[in-house]
Image 1 (cartoon, rainbow, N blue to C red):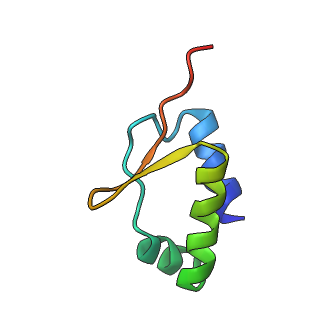
Image 2: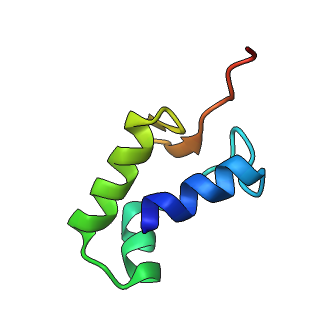
Image 3: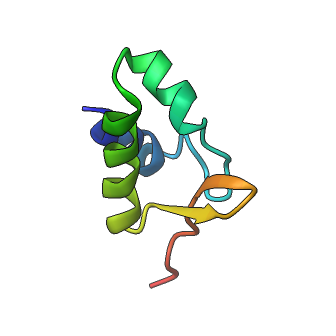
Length: 67
């Protein structure tokens, strides 16, 4: 659910490449889930190459490939 929501917002353009995503804690609070569930959702998005993590800075929407 969480991963699908973010994926849809990224694909629709609502979340643009380079946009900073909320923290895992904020996502857990927003969706009323555990930190572990929010982390797994973000991991799925990372595996799909929709987001990138920058240590110490946060998580951002990945640039779209120009193919």
